[in-house]
Length: 452
Image (cartoon, rainbow, N blue to C red):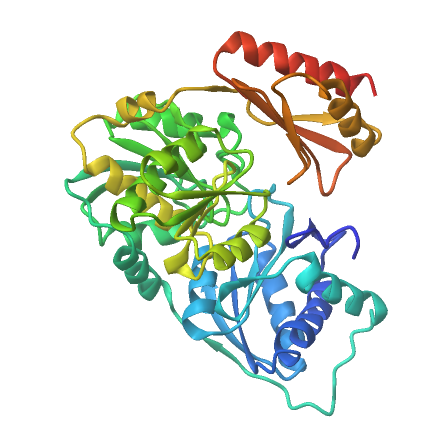
């Protein structure tokens, strides 16, 4: 259980780490932690298209119903559809997915009623400990078995996205790379309600991911989309990860639109209709994000990385929107949950509101250069991070903070190093005003890390 219960979800290789018996026991533990403890008699369950998802879903539902919980099975859906159902029905939810991991992986994403997040400290540790304490496949004979009913919520989800998002001022040609994954289910239903010519790419559901891995954060996995956008003379290309809760974009030339730029563009659009509102941004976002928020009259709040903390901060600050450089986007009007599809609709609306191509809009925001995330394997991430902090300590006009890992900021550069939650890695992000400064800061940090 320690190997598969992560900080924000449950994830492991099938069947050696996660099998039917484990899924059934997890169902019983989830019933105790998310349902019985909160006095909720039902739970929503969805799944992705991985080859192991049907059997794991059946086992999970067996564990839930054997514990007296009624299951509302919403079938093949994206994770943001699961959040929608949780919010709309006011029920906790479980999504069977391993997000962007390879096909041999699977797992569970959880939420409480109203799509409220579940992380290690808010339920996952309790679920882990329950399974570890009682690994037997035992039913509670004193509790009547629950039922499992099927419900289609996809059309209602699409209506919510279109109603919550802005209308498009002109027709756009859009290529969508679903990666043989769940955007192939949601994109046609949502885009059918928009003024869009949809060009589908890899829309055949296939949990073996025959065309490329379901991780658009890796630029190599965007090659098909970039070619298709140019060939189709499209206005924009969109790529979604395996469970379609993250969205990435390329412009009409096939060039990547940095996720921080998407955060800035969506924030700018929302602030036009909600002047003075609060916008959250994770600390690995580019400096253009707080700059654009301030220029649009909004209040920017910097947060640690990670959906559970950001969702809690959304509620705390009554923020209208939050974004991460990882491609997660959060909306107050979507129960503070993240939705790749809703972010896509806002981005399309921003593009449709001008006659300029997307590349021109992006170029106006290209004030900084970024290293991208660099992962460095180290024996002890804490020791290496401390060494980096000491290397920059006491320098003039340099500030440090520990909001999430270590962030060191100069007047025209900054970097952040964070330890991985699951591996002996340090994750480094560097940004500067020009390539020379970027290389100088990056290489100095890397040399310090590697000396450890």
